[in-house]
Image 1: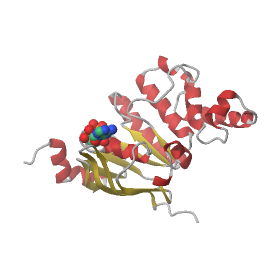
Image 2: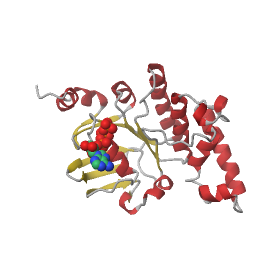
Image 3: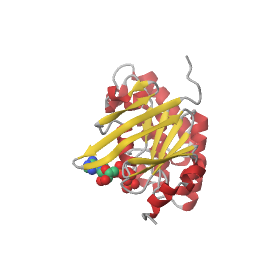
Image 4: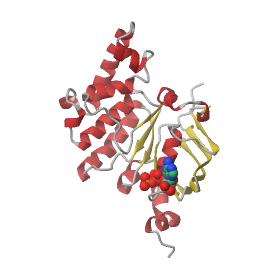
Length: 260
Ligand SMILES: Nc1ncnc2c1ncn2[C@@H]1O[C@H](COP(=O)(O)OP(=O)(O)OP(=O)(O)O)[C@@H](O)[C@H]1O
């Protein structure tokens, strides 16, 4: 049965993560609906990256559960996450800097192919058809992201903003149902942030995916998100439309860092 378009793709329930004495997440629950762009905000140390790391299975959690696309994420090891349909970008870019733009995007594709990265690298039998398909899909992404002029350039030669787009391409190449964006605006200039907002919406519409975005740039989060979840000291302090969360007294207080 095809799920209703507004049903939850991701359900986080009562999530708790502790690191030797620090409670990084303390009973966090929220849903992200299919086709939505959801923003996750909070001051430094609020627990946003910890939550992302739980979704990528890089961190385990002491209590709680995460359901993704109808299955418990606890059952999936970290190396299966991309294959399940969760793609991710990182605060510090995760790219092979001596490889070309096109090849970096193709690496992301290998989570989708049967033979995988190693078989392709070793040119084992049967990789030809998959290789052709991967190249074609990577080229489509290069065009979509406006990276054609630099497709054959090494990533190390490119400006930071362009490298961030390459990382988006790598994450999209695995055809995720859920795209996790970890501070995509960090290090970008004003114009680039404006273009990023339009790009995130275009990605959601073109690839019919769901986006969860951790971001400090309030202008970007509030303009692209359908829903916003706010964390502070590991707890959810607000959830709602961007307008509701922007006006929430607890959120304002958390950002101002004052009780007054
Ligand atoms: N691997 C770890 N070991 C110990 N403590 C950690 C670890 N990862 C996170 N923490 C702690 O958990 C809390 C939440 O950190 P987290 O990085 O998730 O916050 P954040 O909201 O992403 O912050 P920022 O916006 O600064 O990136 C912090 O107190 C942090 O020091």
